[in-house]
Length: 126
Figure 1 (cartoon, rainbow, N blue to C red):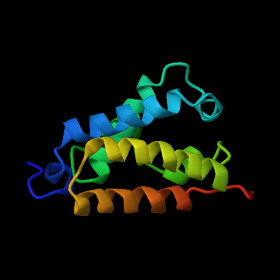
Figure 2 (figure 1 turned 90 degrees about the vertical axis):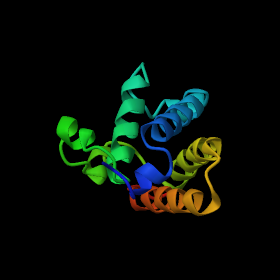
Figure 3 (figure 1 turned 180 degrees about the vertical axis):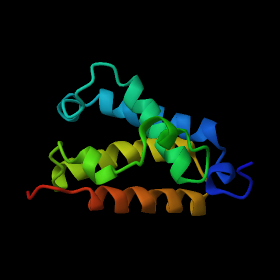
């Protein structure tokens, strides 16, 4: 059903589940950055990230079915995202992306998205 999509090319649900799990595992081990996440249990955030990324990359539309339009800027507006927080977020995402051991072109495509998204969500000066 998702044949030919980036979602399918990188391994589908399993890949995005691992990415989200590794990301939040890294965030959970960083007490200072973890404080930005209000939920005590990171599992719901892990699932939201997984579903969002699956949908973004051409997989199932479950994220929108459950939560509506992604509206990333609106959803992130309550949090201070300056260059420090952006860079910490990117460091945790780098750990997660590296854990996937994707082929170079797929890794670069995924990383480019995360880098651009992180920069676009900045909402506070340093």
